[in-house]
Length: 166
Image 1 (cartoon, rainbow, N blue to C red):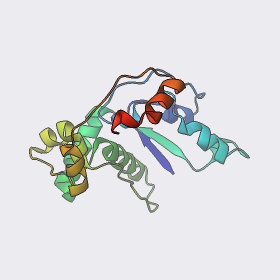
Image 2 (tube, rainbow, N blue to C red):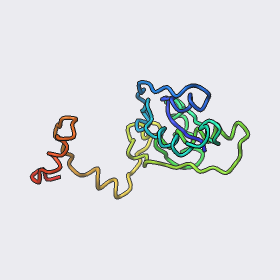
Image 3 (cartoon, rainbow, N blue to C red):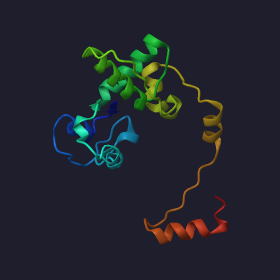
Image 4 (cartoon, rainbow, N blue to C red):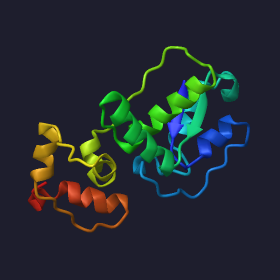
């Protein structure tokens, strides 16, 4: 398994031999991966609780914003496929894996439609990426937000308020 992430290198550093060292996150184009203390690490450690996690067949690769941009452009040019920044991380990680001679079968999981990241993808590709119908419908809806304290009781009050029209 290859874990692909952005410039937030907590997991690549760990699987590269360093101690697990959570840190401040860095803002990147693949913003859902902007995590300095990955919560999924605990799940991974639990899955491999009977052995050293570093001895599992897992590696992790960090991809910076410039490589994300490059991969978005190259994937579109070479495969006719527009991808989001997160998928570009995975595509770049697979390319790196192939360059080391590892040609085992691989699967890249695309986590989002590139239209969700139009401000990143469209300027790179020089064209509009139309959203799929379900996403287009969501994007047309009016958004509504109310400030709320970051406390459980505040959330509970909002959830119990039937006049919120949620």
